[in-house]
Image (cartoon, rainbow, N blue to C red; front, side):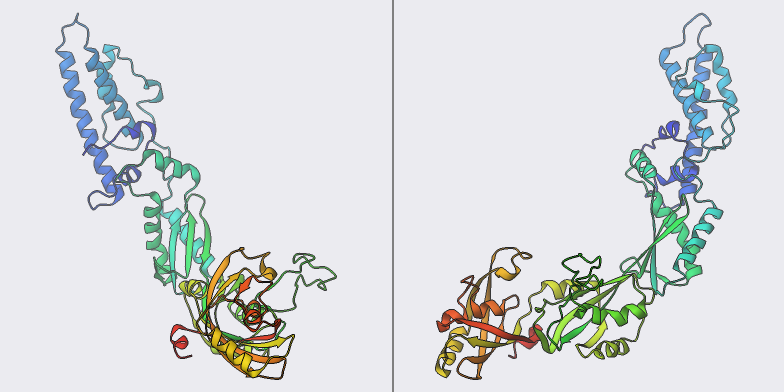
Length: 470
């Protein structure tokens, strides 16, 4: 293959950086590869120069030198000077004196001086591979990590924009990025100091370094803890709501708390974990959500609590669960460490659910009517347009859901309970009241009586195997 040495005329790359342009070829260090390629080229140039001079010396004294030969001499001279500037030793620049008598004109002659000292830093690496720089960056990495508990880490290198642009300009198909090489060289120093394992797939912490200014930033990956929660009382939302009046800033209406509601399932669960794990923030991810006036009972709702940028990663989960349960409002069970994909599963996979609705009718309703209602609800497909009460925050579309089974319990002539096993995402209040016809069929429509859902509880959010046993 042809090695492109012309890049050295514009950028005096050091041996390491020139070797990196061909880093995917032959097993060798970038420094050794670059040094060997330059040395081989220097030998070739000297041979070509001597041959060209011999040819010129054979030219009769009164004859003009062939312009092609002059162009070749110009090219040889420029590349010899370029190699010299990159620190390649042994180049015999005095040989070029022998062609001065031919009054050859060189386009870039003014840029070079034979006796020039090669003390400029390489424009690509700028000396970042010097041991003192790597040791200083390693020291900064160790200091940045000192406040965190972790088992695994990964070091990444961040390049300033101008060096990215340079890489793009001089890139070859065989180039290794300077990011890769610096990360590798830094790792040789950092790993023995930190004494943690390197994990390229799922590290606890990603360390990003800028080798040019020695700055270190950390990407501390979150801890995911999963379980199931029960909401034992009404009047508590699942997640924190900012005050509608001040949007979280604090005002008289919210008693300067910034909250629409004093607490939430999210806050009750998160508080003990945040106190111990010292995270920067948190997020609760649930398998759906219940309304503020609905309890979550039974085996509870699957959830994942995400603790962001934790300084402590290993905690006693049962002990923290007990602290949550002391609230009397929320209870969590089956607590264990999770992974990021659990969030996707809980939030996006469908979960069938069982509800208990207290139905109140405007007119008297008989046992026979309720029994007939239950028969009609079995395996019934429901077309449900986005309820009016949530249309301001949900897309206006028609969802198709199914009621699989229902069980009745009469309370009096106007009230009965309805246990409903159905698809997740079915709005039960609207299934009962019809939402002005936006849900069809509905309990009101099937009974031909105006009905409302007076109280509602979620009895279970089913795993697939649970649903089969209803």
